[in-house]
Image (cartoon, rainbow over all chains, first blue to last red):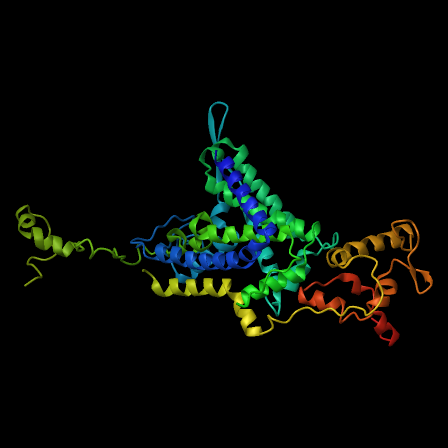
Amino acid sequence: MGIWFSLVAVAALILLGLLGANVSGLNYIFAVVIPYIAITLFIVGSIVRIVRWARSPVPFRIPTTGGQQKSLSFIKQNRLDNPSSYLGVLGRMALEVLFFRSLFRNTKAELKEGPILTYGANKWLWMFSLAFHWSFLIIFLRHFRFFTQPIPFFVPFLQDIDGFFQIWVPLIYMTNAVILAALTYLFFRRVFDSKIRYISLPSDYFPLLLIAGIAITGILMRYFFKTDLVAVKELMLGILSFAPSAPSEGLSLWFYLHLFFVCSLLIYFPMSKLVHMSGIFMSPTRNLANTNRMRRHVNPWIDELKMKPHTYEEYEDEFRKVMKGAGMPLDKEESHVS
Amino acid sequence: MYGTGKVLIGILIFILAFTSPILINMAGGKASVKANPVLPQSGKCIESKEYMKGYHMEMLDIWRDKVVRQDIRFLKKADGSYYMLNGAKAEMSLTKTCMSCHDNKAKFCDECHNYLDVNPYCWDCHIDPSLAKKGVTK
């Protein structure tokens, strides 16, 4: 169900993109107007999402950790998995953002003959999602050769490393092959595993298919159906320096499809699960030091609820007479409130 | 909003990262500079301009394989006859054939290549013939 919905949605995007490429009156809208709308919606939408997260109070540190917390001096603390300092949190965030550490701990539950329920390490998801995300980042950074003049220093550097094997002309980039392999795995993981298929929604299939569409149109354009790259760069420079020019005749259908897919992704980004790009930095289980027992954490909405913290001192004041009558030990004989 | 300071720093980094192409173009001031390859005044290329724009690198790759691996040195037309260049059979050679008309590497090849940051490894071995005439060696 989810697959068919997503396939139809991507097919609709392809038809729209073809419309933009073939109807000359719509060229300007698809090559200039929609990219501006997409960039604006992407940036504004992402900020709205971040602010909305930041407005939710996190009253207590949530220590979903994978290691020993800070305790007595002779017990060794796991500083990265259960940090109690700001620096430790930075380390945990870096491991999470750059290497997906919590996904590395992913396990797979399987019901076997017997019936026996087994839990085993499952690193495939971690490996392919890491490959996917890093490839995507490198491909995005390589595209700066179309976005800017002068071209930043990292573009030739990345191109040299990515095309290291010097296979074919134009050179095959490793990331192009890797992102296709990773997308294939991530998609068919949802198709072939009945448990994952059961919990998969259109919002799981659609982004994978959309990104696959971007990657495939890009690869076809680079290696098989050439478009006028000078015209592409002139268009992108025009857009990104706020002096858009009319799209050249040399821009091919593949370019319009590629650009329209990217714009769709940018628009879809803030309103979908893809916003985990900024969300990962806002995860309370990752970005808070585990200081639950070291410091007192006051509920930030306590005033709104007209709740006052009730200390033991105040408790004793309230029940002193009763406690005295029952012969219970007291910290103070008289109320500290005069 | 909670943790306002840190969140604002995060949002600022986000904006800077994703508007960096715009910022680089504004700071560089070169966004309106266009690639302007100088074409030869006379002569006719062996293929159309549109084909050459997209596929010249593939053609040169095929030439290289034919010359180096199959010892087929001369360029044939579709009808089987040879291309002639200055009274001799034209070789499948970047420096001897293409660059006999497109004789200025800096003003022809490099214009678009630099504009798009393309670094073809042709020049790891080959040398611009005009430089060779001046006695420059690699």
